[in-house]
Image 1 (cartoon, rainbow, N blue to C red):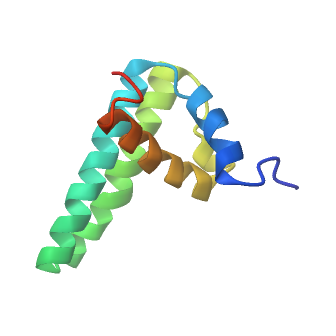
Image 2 (image 1 turned 180 degrees about the vertical axis):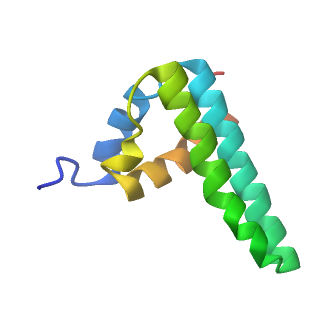
Length: 101
C-alpha cells in the first residue's frame, strides 16, 4: 500500500485534524511529558526496567484520548513513525503556545 504522505510536513496537518478534543490533546501532552521525564531518568540512572513504562505512558494516555474523547482510531496504527514524531511536535507546539489547551 502506498503511503499518501510523502513527508512529515504532509502528515502533520492530518495528525492535527485527528486531535480536535482538548482533553485528548492534554492526555497526549501528559503522556509525552512523562515519556520525556522517564527517558531522562533512565539515562541518568541506567534503571533499564523503567523502559517498560515508556510505551505504557506514551501510548496509554494517547489511546485513551482517542478512543474515549476523540472517538477515532490513533494514527499510530497506519503511520507509526510519523505519529510518534507528531506526538513530540505537538508537545512542542503546546509548550510554545502554538496549540492552546
